[in-house]
Length: 371
Ligand code: CP3
Image 1: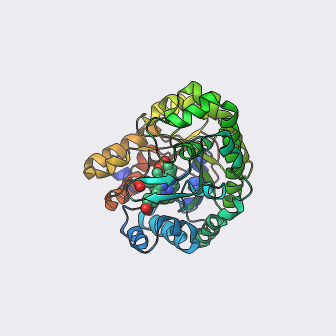
Image 2: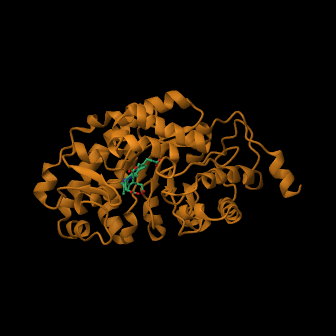
Image 3: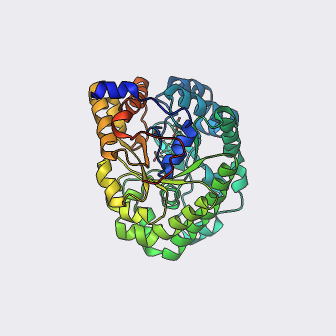
């Protein structure tokens, strides 16, 4: 059958809701078509978000379940995606641990008293995760709205990435303070990561209890580490956290940026899905990981500034590399940036659906053989 005819003929299977499609893909079960959603799908590139942001700060939105749910829902509906990530921020758990931070325009987060010494780490509190209940409350509202129509992604930072913000006091290029503590005071380092893991596990549990279908753990800056340092200083506590979150009964997506050389070690965390950035071709990343794990990715978010023809080619290339194998979730390799044209994000959703017939094999309901 000619390509165009095949594309026209196949449509999605009505027996699979978006939520079901997304969770099945996380578990490497066959689906009728590749699920698609985007990191930072609700954000400054979207006029609706900007409108809310004119009257509220980022933290006000995060802490107001009504607003956080609205922002989450609006973005997911506008893009017609298969999953919605709850609107929140990675740094929220730091507040209850005793750190004061703010988001400065153009600079990102600033933590006013960075954690640098053993005494600083000892002072961090791990008993106030319940103060994060507003995130679970927002999830409840999003779940009530979508029911099973799309998947709901809860999230938290990974211990390393959060520790790096705590220690550096914000974003960093060389992670000098973070790595100094890690190399010079391994016991203090371990205590810090373990304290973070205690809070993150409880935070994830609240989100699952509220109805999150999947938890994504952002280790955005793990790519700053060599594989040896990752294994020695980060892998054990991360693996334990992932195991505990999985024990809550949900799949875990573990994501980092610039991780091509870390993939085998990230795989050892036991996460159900590994997020790939665009620097590694999807097929190469997946074979490095082995096909017993699902992958999410990996369009360069800056390709969303390209002409539709090139964008379409690149979407197709990623689907071709995934080869219709169960366990691929289409996404960008890192968050959508401000000023991205929304129409191009919508186009990607349409392209993923269009090319589906070429790469994803025909699906029959009840088909749950792992590929
Ligand atoms: O749809 C979504 O993904 C939105 C929910 C979301 C936000 N932050 C809202 C937000 C998510 C999943 C995050 C995660 C997050 N926060 C990460 C990990 C993701 C990644 O990019 O790897 C990190 C590192 C943070 C910390 C953080 N928050 C930074 C570095 C910044 C500044 C970035 C910038 O572009 O200015 C933020 C602010 C932030 N968090 C914004 C949004 C929509 C933009 C700021 C705003 O609205 O004022």
